[in-house]
Image (tube, rainbow, N blue to C red):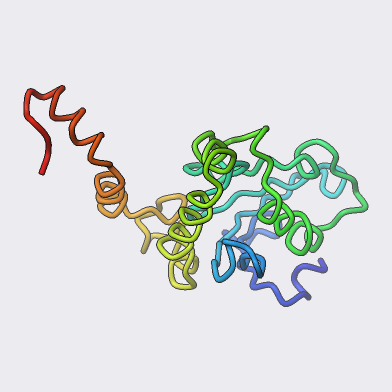
Length: 186
């Protein structure tokens, strides 16, 4: 397999040649630059005639990636796969192109798609925030492991709860206050 002989760090899952993790770095000159993701790859028995299953293990903010499950919406993998492609194509061409040129009209993450279309600067800022919080070398290395609590997407439940609360705007606080009968949450 060409992927094993490439420069990519590949880690077998349960000593299976059909299931493994690949360390993937965000493309240069993009908001994903500097990010490191663990990507789960599962090869079907019919590979290379049937496409591999590809998913991000640690969190990524992107219109075409399900934020919680990590699954990827990419036509070349899901619909137009050819046995002429190989896994090196996935990591050197398909995934970098997906990150460089997101398709907000066919989203798995509606929030990311809407933000990209309506507020591109806020979208870039949120991507960079996710890169710094969820896509470091250390987090990618432990994502999906027992050290990570086994959470998909490198989630730390305490951190995620804090993130949700810190992402609330003053308007959200006021609305919660109205609903609970308080003036606001300070």
